[in-house]
Length: 141
Image (cartoon, rainbow, N blue to C red; front, side, top):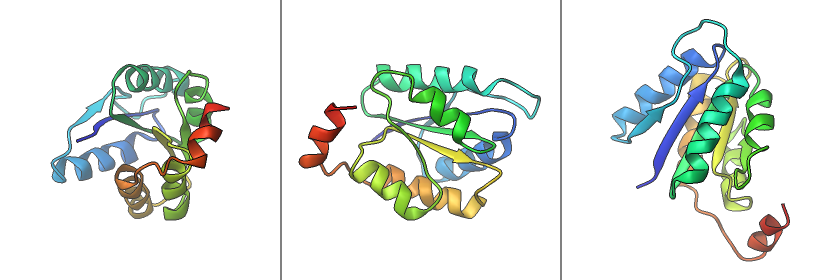
């Protein structure tokens, strides 16, 4: 079983809570590292918190949510061994894991529906890295 860590800023808070509720109904354990309300916060603080957990724990995937997903992905990808992918549909979520072995998915709460976000997360969590030629490419990142 994978460990799942989730974080958001204020703009992503409502979607984060929706995702947590869905995942708990799936009997998955999710560690929430904030934010804890819709009060304005700085997204990098939460992207750093999540990235530090993901890179230290084996078999751990992260979910980051902000208004556009862009700020979170930029911040997370500053961390060594974090491969964050901004996903907006099923295909982007699948390919991010299959070919890029992404270990963090970022979502833009202002740009994706709750239904589509859940679909992307499900695919992200279930898809395994294909390896092969893709492993060589990841080493070059």
